[in-house]
Image (cartoon, rainbow, N blue to C red; front, side):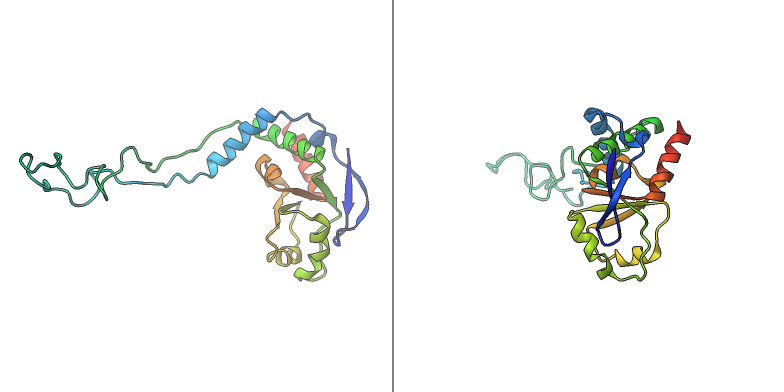
Length: 208
């Protein structure tokens, strides 16, 4: 499978053959969905907390006597049916963490990359080496990519590119060894450097 080879100005300078081991697999949408739920669940902090009637201050005294007032019986002002009362079955801090074997996560990455390549979302650049750390040097690349979110995948990050892209909310980056299926599916464009793509392909081969 071929894709566009771009320069730092966003101009197409040729074609690039994507490694078959990463981009030639038929994706299984149900499997990818399972893995996406895994990543999203593990991002869930699980810190939501509400107080029960036992944890709210006050309410120790009976509001009024049991009989003779004409009103409904009440034993505490912190009853869940009262304003400022406790919460019934509310959320408490807990872990949402899930587990999947590393082999499934690796396979999910390959299938996600294959799916994105089929959509035309995968591009390749020679490198990310900028002459100066200036944001305006990336304006041409940003216009050419024309995407709400772009993830640059490389073997090592160029310091000038890192500084220049800090002010661009649609640009992100990660090292090839840290790429996962969630990031591959989440971003509208995936831009690999040649060295980053080679490093990713080599790591997958070694894992097999």
